[in-house]
Image (cartoon, rainbow, N blue to C red; front, side, top):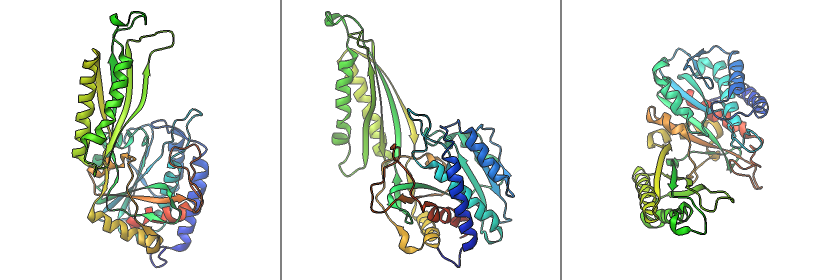
Length: 379
């Protein structure tokens, strides 16, 4: 950390507070659009500072504004939701750490008001896991209700594959666009002893699933990054030898809009014509879930400078992008954006990935995360 850039004592205080916030938030995990306790906690913490609030009319999430008397504004965003699991909601993606990082940065920036180069918009976003929160906030009038449009928006996400202390600053595509598909094949049920008078949607589904696997290998350039996968199939019951319907869900991901459009086209074609080949009816819905996160050349320079001041050049690293998705991308449609990965892995050991039951954020995470998220308002 650059000691000439940050107030070291104040930053240590902010990091310590972030750790305390994380301990509390980890015990109250809530799924998307139901983050009531989490939102109340954020409001309670924010009430200790001189902030104004943007009322979006939403039940969860919060937008706070720090007016430092500057002519420009920088936006910072953190997601606040947890994952649904068989044992109830659980913070298995580290959003509690992201929220705590933002609260730590908020503490630092509110107390370093005279050093700020910009006013600061703090966006505590609900429902990232459901990829609804960013769009819901925008639809609720986020950009119309704030005092001024931000010149930049920054976000962070922990990365278990990266050691604590290191920050990934990547130029270009970082996380993929994602679309989800829902396919229903409708046949005609009946007794297994008379298959000739029935139409079996399970057979059609089996061939459809196999055919969809060919999209990546036969319809997309080998040089392109793309994934097309089946998530689930549900059809029939043991007591019903041949059901009426088979339900298939899946997704496809890419960085390139043309590749994404081609996969959309092929999923629809394969579903339609495979169903026809097996005399089934086909209903298909494809839902965009997130756009790709792409750090522009211009924003890369800004992001690198902020990270270098926050953690030192030796801890600013690059990394291959990944095919996960993040709805932070929707903010980037309106404001120049930059997204960091902040190391959350313990060096020298196996670190469970996002959404794994053994996922954890290693000690020391906030010592890099809080300065990194604070820095854009100071440059």
